[in-house]
Length: 137
Image 1 (cartoon, rainbow, N blue to C red):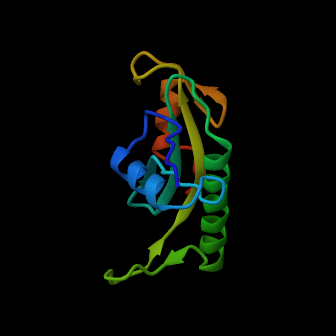
Image 2: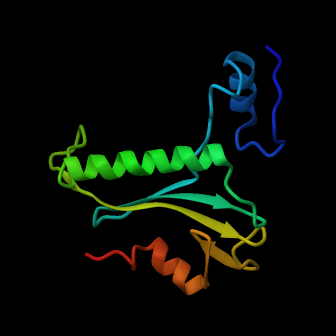
């Protein structure tokens, strides 16, 4: 198999090299990362994909993120929000706030504008969303 990396900006070049060399072609296997999982002591949790310089999410990454989103929603609903974690003495009450796309216009948070799920937000609105200020408790 011939390995061809589609980007030089891989978050983990060693992993990309290994999977590109040892897994079958990219038409049958999609590897993606989730940039951030945010969770607080109140049981709130969300998945967050970050894109810099106004970049968009690839179709493969978007479909994988949406698949995970649906699986987590179904699991939380099936468990009535009460999740037993091995090693903990009590269940965690999970309030899943979804999977989201955060796009920055530049390369840093101080000099960028932001979109949250493709809608413009201010820095204060972004902080409120990241701290679950939009989630009913």
